[in-house]
Length: 406
Image (cartoon, rainbow, N blue to C red; front, side, top):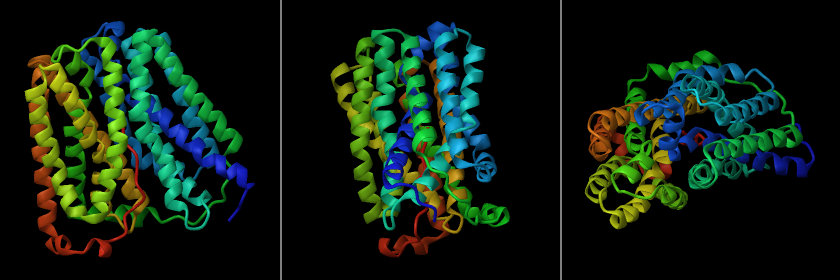
């Protein structure tokens, strides 16, 4: 394998993590400023919610094909181009007050989102020293948790304390710095033999895979039917002052980062029980949110619990889908990226409909219904292969590399 100077390789993986952080901040940052953005673009909050949903839908529709096509291109060029597109889009968000233009500019970077994540993960593991591939992958995708913990609330904070364009200019600068880092520190990697398209596509003939896909989609729909409108809920149901929305989102993200570690350990000890318990936890959480919603102090405490539960969605659903894609892990991860984003689209669309027709007060009940549907899909998948339920965790099939969300 081609090796560059150790210092260069040592910086390449953190640069990829910074790129992931910038992309997550761009994708999900609008969640924290949705009311202000809706006002700036002269649309209803539910309509503005499409800025989240359209991004996710584009990722869902183009992810697998985009990853397959990009696998034949020079990785460094693809990674840098993706970050440049994200930087340019953020700059144009800051300048525009046209909803159709901003919506179009959300779709463009979404085409590069799954490609960046897939290539970044592969590149990180190839750059790692022997036996350190898992650590390199974990470093790259620490950017996901950091994006939720700091990128989203930072966007909200800048919008509240400076102005909405300042939030987007900061995201543009972040992506531009990551782009420059890729150009400066990311080495050229030699081509390696890749699995055939037919071999990877063959996993699509498995019925059990599609039940796992349904569970992934419904879990993410449940997660983002509420989270996509968290700022709307906190301001209009709880009555939280807009200046406190950013700190609340930051607390949500910090707890989410810690919660990732907890769910990772639970998956190591008992993956099937953890996967089954997750939609039950989210259902119970939404019932608690429904009760605490109008009361600021209990609601702020519930936001911390919400962040802890929300954090498990990525690892839990990826582990579930990976069980049925062990012979095509990269393609399995592309399916995970696509259908988790389809779930985000479904969830934000349903949440927007609830906000428009019944008001944000009823968002938790819609989320609880989606969590119940996700639990049904998990139980149906388990019935197809009950022997795996008795399998010791140490004997379970090796999981694919973890993949990122929205």
